Image 1: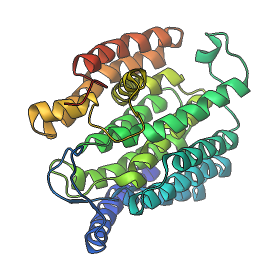
Image 2: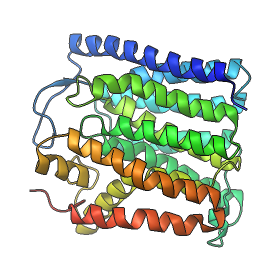
Image 3: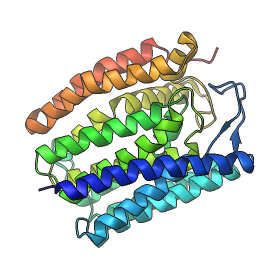
Length: 342
């Protein structure tokens, strides 16, 4: 049972604290010239402060520790979520200040993912057994790869104002509701709402036209935290992992289709580009806001009902996942995800 007091504290503290902290981070970024300078692959035209995700990181980590002090999160879960998140954020912050080699970042992402899965006690899901994959070792290996992919995926998809923050708020709120409805752990449910609240506080500054960007410190942290929360909730049986896949469908489909097409064509897929479907739409419509609003609408009106159905009828969850994501795959390809750059 979630107590109203803890819920109120989680929401009010994270929203207000992140809003205030983002303002502080923005002033600091401008003072030290930590700016995102437009180039040929940018989706903005003016230098914008970056690194605003640091505010989300600090507020959310504080919320996790607070939940532990209240006895709502055990030490192993806090170590997994907060310890792993802090490592991802630290690497992202260093990358914001001085670009790090992609191989070094990816190595840290994989090692951190292994840290999380180990502290959560491994991962095995009914979805894997339906494909004949048994045992914690197989599930844990796939969970590590999924964590590493989500960490990078959010960095790829954080290319226009408000899109990554909006996606985070949706996934957290929808996941918290579905988890609560199906008896999820109260601490994890409130942790999801705390991350949503911290992101809302930042989103006030990031809503189109953005006054500050997440930076790698924020985008990687959000992708990692969402995946870690999803794995933690699924591992405890509150909802199947397919629910998490459906809720993150827009980002998963666009990023994966883009990556696969670039790899198959022989492009240097690890280099910066502007070939995601959402980036092409932003250029076609000459604005960020319509794209962000469309993504929100798809999330709420299309993916959320499918996720609820997958949680309610678990035996059909794989089929519901295919039904939910197939139109998104078609749309991504129609809009040119991964196609050659103009």
